[in-house]
Length: 396
Ligand SMILES: *Cc1c(COP(=O)(O)O)cnc(C)c1O
Image (cartoon, rainbow, N blue to C red; front, side):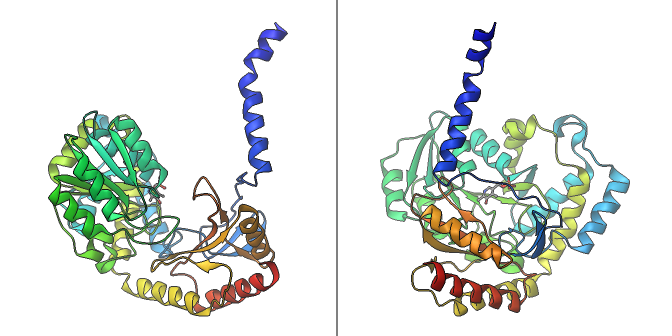
């Protein structure tokens, strides 16, 4: 009996060993306990911090209008969806948000998902199949790769933003259908993909473009319409995804594209079909958020000012900001331990920016993923720059 039990526990022993190894390698991740709303000043692990690490780029996660909208909508639509979309879970609030989102991004139709992760695995998994091929940037978000895996299509990865490498792959491909998948704004690098080049290749090689705009939506383009608007692009070959838990400040995601694409996904995207939609009250909140985004040119201008303020006030020799024009301004440090040491130094000064390490980023490119939000003040950023300058002179 005891023998059998020990054998059954071999998995648990294995898990413990893996965890110990992660710790030895300086890769063990830990959650912080947050006791405040998401904002620029937060309480984490019982301490107050000035935070530079949320994706709440416009500062909407704690916006009074949205809190009121959520309370109101919970009052008239309840708190739970209760059934999947194809049974009785598709509420008018969901439907209305989908229509508003499609109109906002100027695409024929849109479909809501509960998270961006679910959208990517569901959409790529549904649109591509065995005789198809997916071409993905090496630095894409993990869930795009998982979508490719679910689809069973051939899967090719090209070097970051490398249009020539991508063209070679497309040229050589005999796949029935081809999909280029890329982050529009790279989550750990902050740079923007060469989307116009990708679209040109799509037209040349009869491919389609799946663009994950998690970090461009709300921030880039006219009135925050996102990366497509930033480049002024429109094409029936484009399918876009954006998350609603980042700049939009709430939760969820949507996919937008031609009506036929959306109609097909409603039938075939498993993470849509077999899952309970987010509460309708969230959709009502997001309609209010969309309106703040659209009217948020001042927020975006302030955010741009903060980005320039950070760049102009860092005098670093060893560490460097990676080339980025977006609210994501990663500071490349290199080794895991050095990045963790810097992050700990900042925490002692009351500033929170976690170290990002492999496997989230490539080996030897551990970094501080600095992100700015429209709720930061110029003084917040000046103080942060001063502490970083000081940190380099003491640590590097
Ligand atoms: C955050 C993120 C996702 C996942 O979105 P969630 O709504 O958080 O699940 C997908 N793609 C990219 C590029 C992201 O940054």
